[in-house]
Length: 200
Image 1 (cartoon, rainbow, N blue to C red):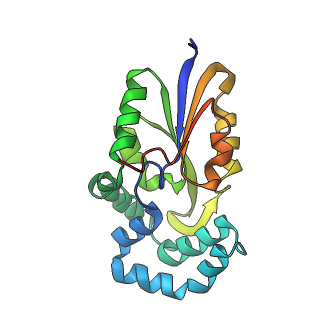
Image 2 (cartoon, rainbow, N blue to C red; image 1 turned 30 degrees about the vertical axis):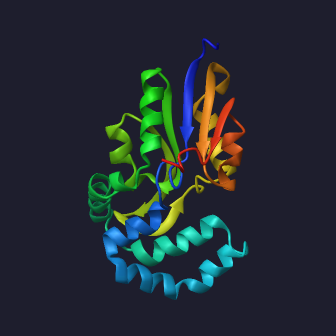
Image 3 (spheres, one colour; image 1 turned 180 degrees about the vertical axis):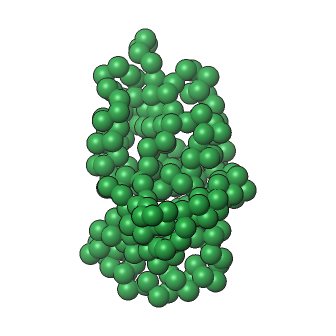
């Protein structure tokens, strides 16, 4: 038995949640019709992404710019907070909540590491006292540009951010993910879990 403190890193979309939250925050803020209209208009770029010909961060910024570019940050954040309170709880896997509760009782440090923007996660994660490492959206004069500030928190970037904050030698490391992009983070852990909550 290790006497080191535990630290647990959770991917968010698809691991803790049942769905990718980017389409859901778009639907919540803009409506279902606007979501599908936008996805249809952006289909050529989304197809390139699916074929591996367009980078993840570029595809994400095309979506963000189309749906949110030019929107006032205060309005966007108000809607994100409403989403976190009213919609997000319905997307959370029960098994993930149970694992979080168990680890918290064990005294573990709990961290969400997400490629999604923290804007629509933070109010929920704060309510459970979870730390959050996420993608940051660029703001210019109080307005969303549709671009990402710095790098998309995806793949190897998750590992880089984790190592920049924590000395993992001090911890027994747990990691939870659901996609190939999470594999670098899962490799950090002494105990890793791939698609762990799908049956719950």
